[in-house]
Image (spheres, helix red, strand yellow):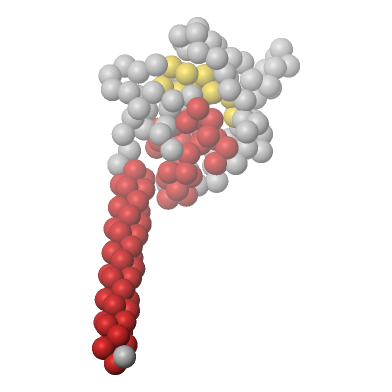
Length: 158
């Protein structure tokens, strides 16, 4: 009977050792996964690459009053101007345009970086942009769609 107890004890020791090894492997995998994800997110924040090379495509974007930075990012992502709305939010927080993005109608290009788009959305670079504000005809925003290549507009209501 003593031999049976010893064999059972050895089996449970091996089982607990295997279980411990499996737990360590899972922890190592999780640390590597979280580290890689954090690195990729940080790389995307500081490595501003336009969505298109060369001339790009003009796209008209309408930002409604009261839209959050995340909502603006979702609109830009949907239009193919940026890759990730969450990355855009962090880029805005770290940029000189923090809390400066304004509602309006804008013409953005797929060859622009997020920083260049923020300059336009903050109205610090208005070259080639539609007239904003009250005109003599009472329109709040004049939209020139001749440069957009047939692209539609998107409302900031997400």
